[in-house]
Amino acid sequence: MTEPANRPAPAPGAHPAIELKGISKAFGPVQANKDISIRVMPGTIHGIIGENGAGKSTLMSILYGFYKADAGEIFINGTKTTINDSQDAIAAGIGMVFQHFKLVENFSVVENIILGAEEGASLQPSIRKARKSLKSLADEYEMHVDPDALIEHLSVGHQQRVEILKALYREANILILDEPTGVLTPAEADHLFRILDNLRREGKTIILITHKLREIMEITDTVSVMRRGEMTATVKTSETNPEELAELMVGRKVLLRVDKKPATPGDVVLSVKDLRVTDAKGVERVKGISFDIRAGEILGLAGVAGNGQSELMHVLGGIMDGTGEITMLGQPLPLSGKGSDGAARRKASIGNVPEDRQREGLIMEFTAWENTVFGYHRDPQWQSGALMNNAAIQKEAAGKMERFDVRPPDPNLKAKSFSGGNQQKIVLAREIEKYPDLLLVGQPTRGVDIGAIEFIHQEIVRLRDQGKAILLVSVELDEIMSLSDRIAVMFDGQVMGFRDPSETDERELGLLMAGISGEPDKDDFKAVEENITAVEQGEAPHNG
Image 1 (cartoon, one colour):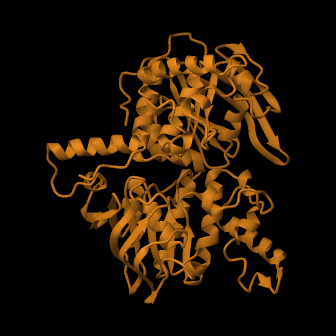
Image 2 (cartoon, rainbow, N blue to C red):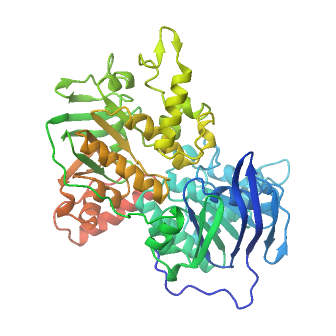
Image 3 (cartoon, one colour):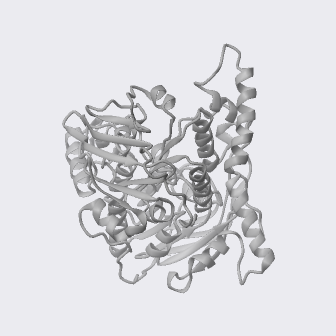
């Protein structure tokens, strides 16, 4: 990632690029922001951290005009500014890149860039102008992207670049990024930070909302900490450390490593032999892999996104078909046709926390209490004949939300009303509290704050210690290293090898993730770079 040295300091006496004074905002009885004041200096990267529900996104949504503050003032470059909507924010030179992108998937890149900024009835002049501007911006900030590509065909990393380019096209000098690495691979995150460093060097002001302390320490100049709607501290990044920031965020000391006893594996729970998976386009994504998972162990599956992990999880969870042989507690599981769906997998005692919580784990328009029972709603404890015992489900949902610290703890709120981290807790509560013999966990802490990460890790380890088998998929290598009892590395649909976490390191795992086993030579390192570039460009990795 970007080194913090040689950063230009703001000019002496310069007005803050942004100054918020006494900002307050309530949603009914919930005080999301309470008398918040903050100053962000020009040409700096200012981090804002806090637990899910701390009020970070609400504060930035006020700055961008999505919400109107109940009280307080906004100053841009020293001038008091009224921001009633996003058009006011854009006019003031503010751009925002949301955690969940605001792009039209079946539009091209250039069409998304000009959307809402068209000049005249004919689109062609706007498109020509945008093409020219895109090329200039891409060259200046290392954000090359095909202007004619459809958004739905781009990788997540490239979609994020389009969002940044869209803001720069509108001449934004202040950029707000909300959890920008929550859906990125490590390679994509590294490239994003190179982009942000270039923007900073060009004098842009950046506000970075993130829960990842390592990113805060490596990329920001200043960091502000929010807790329960209030600003608790603002410090220079060079004068703090992850442990201090974590304690400021949560209000208590936080263990930044996974505390677990050595595993004591039992009998084989899941056995996979020669599994192959072909996607809807006829491309083989999983190429004859075999492995076992035993009771009382966590098998971590590492790999750059797009190398077959998702397809493997989909087959095991009953979402996709495959060929080969899978047994669960000695009983064969169908890989296609009758008995191969998600309901059959749940009956076989397989729990599933999918990688994409919003598309596969929740129904966003339904309430939290309804989401806590989806997939299990036909269980006799919840259903008698044609009737559901809604009162019992609501009571149980309230208990789950309390035990998993879901904020706000209101079972009647729709899933879309919760932050990403709290949405994740709802899914985890539903699946973990069924105590399945096998738990599939995809990206368990994506978009989750440091206090919740500690809790989620503890729950996964607790399930392991109860003798359950867990298959963990994560793009976070430190999460794989700290949680797993064994690690399998996937590349191009194949398992490159198995490693004991105590006998490997991130360098070896990174090479395996790039398709290289054994001691690398110069050509191997070139292949690593080519594979990282391929992933950044949304292409399949090269088999080296």
